[in-house]
Image (cartoon, rainbow, N blue to C red; front, side, top):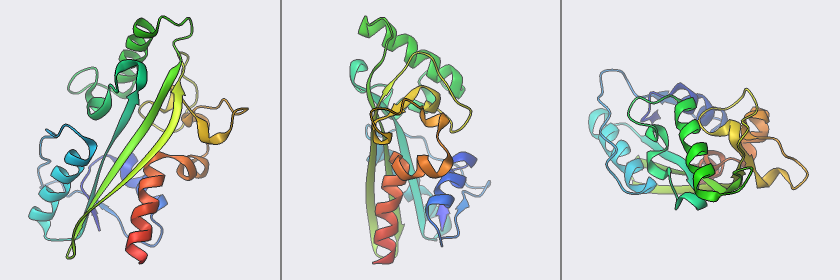
Length: 194
């Protein structure tokens, strides 16, 4: 199965979650389409349709990001380029935290947020969508070495009220068990085994 992405983090993470599935990243010679959709679902389908047309193989594509309530759902579908095209994870995170601190007026800038992931599968039976979320909050002082993206500032609710670790401080197994990508991938795995 091809994952319509060249993001090594995503290929590795989804490969760890989808046990028993041989997952390959998008071949270098296939051009990635522009993500012009207004929703995670639309962007996942854009990528999956492009990869399916180019390869003829079973493909999955995901679109994911962070929605911050105080920022009216931003960065949302722009999570990977929130600080501009070509921005690093650190630049995107810094912009989100600065925007949140300015918008919330709270001393610590923490606020409710969620990670969202939509996985699109295109196989011989058609197109299928699987959506997962992970509720939590952002903190102004990033912590942890694991994960990527906004993980160092995202404290998930699913670990319990006494656990203040960020996603970047969780083990890969702990993260997969509660993450938005893990939830969407679990729905995908259930569909594939049905």
